[in-house]
Amino acid sequence: MARTVGREEKEVLAEHLSRHGLKRSTQREVILEAFLRAGRHVSVEELLAIVRKKRADVGRTTIYRSLKLFKEAGLASELTYGGEARFEPLHNRDHHDHFICGMCGEIFEFKSPEIEQIQETIARGIGFVIEGHRHHILGRCRKCVAKAPRTGARR
Figure 1 (tube, rainbow, N blue to C red):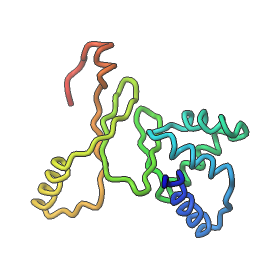
Figure 2: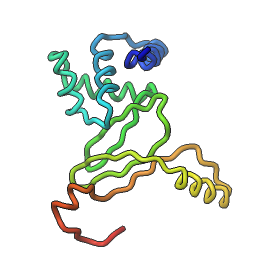
Figure 3: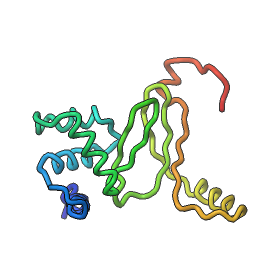
Figure 4: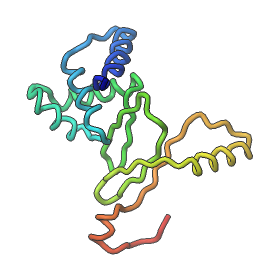
């Protein structure tokens, strides 16, 4: 039996709203479902375009506030690069890291047990306890490399 998209996440959001004395709304639920169904990192503008296919009355500010609320509830993570915030579902997701194209802004997720082990080894060596991290590697994707020759030195 297929899981209803966002059922558990809707429960998490409802609990968060209740704890903070905020009201449930159908707009937030529509936004949450669209966010979860998007299946990728989305900007406010991208999510607005998706949501407006179902609810033309939803505005940019409502999307932005909802995404911030999802983040506070532990349902979303925010990644900002090049002045634009992108959001991705966070609830019950395995840890992963990101490659970010500096030209087109495309974000590619990856998992590497080897990198995770190296971080743990280095941390142990200096007596550091890792409680979390965000690993972002900046560069250019295949499409952008093909469009323009490489300039500048590697950092």
